[in-house]
Image (spheres, rainbow, N blue to C red):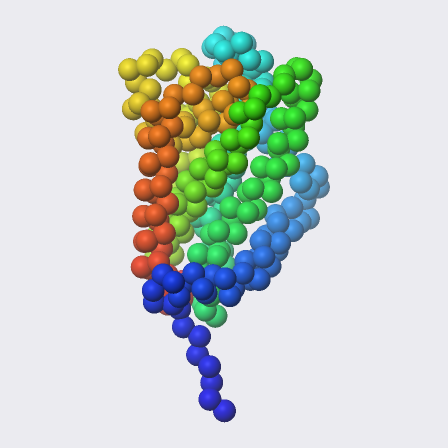
Amino acid sequence: MKATVIKPGKISSEYFKDLFRYRELFYFLSWRDILVRYKQTVIGVAWSVIRPVLTMVVFTIVFGKLAKLPSDNIPYPILVFTALLPWQFFANAISLSGTSLVTNANLVSKVYFPRIIIPSVSIVVSFVDFIIAVVILVILMVWYKYVPTANIMFIPLFTLMAAMFALGIGLWVSALNVKYRDFQHIIPFIAQFGLYISPVGFSSSIVPLKWKFLYSLNPMVGVIDGFRWAVLGNTKLYTEGLVLSGIIILLIFFSGLSFFRKTENTFADII
């Protein structure tokens, strides 16, 4: 009997056909990682709530009560938590996707499938945490009697921007981490440093207008400001910065995808 040898698609159309063929593997790995994430934990999925809530409390005390930064007439806990939603989604996603290939080394080295499935699964797992945390935002808005406007329909757009940015970085770091394990140490630094240079604990309104465009070189500025504009309604959206953030996100995503595609055939040999 002649054996059937499955090889990766050489051109983009074949590669995306492979992605469709292996869609069940994507579903399986997503479900597996969601279950494993909170397996044998005392409080389970509550961790998805506790982390952003504690961060919100700390930021509200430090920036709202002690530093007395302006909140644009928005209750400070809502101002902070609205920013924490996309930020935690992004930070969790790059943390999981950046080390995903090494974590799944046995799977990568044994069988062929489009390797991009593995870091993409991390985005799904982080999105589940994001959805759980949204419930807390709803509770906060009810507590403070804050009614969202029609802008809320744009939330999927800014969620997609955060996902593309996270996956773009995840593709770069996961591919590099296969050969250079030092890159796994870069991810916590990005998450920690990015938290304080992004407008999570404060409003972007405190940034002088002459610096706003430069500040928007951090793509999460556009994403976070977009979230606040979509959820809170009365915050002003800096359109030029949002466009700049969107362009940078697209560049990082497509460059990460290109680099990942060029290097993925070597993963099984190196890992």
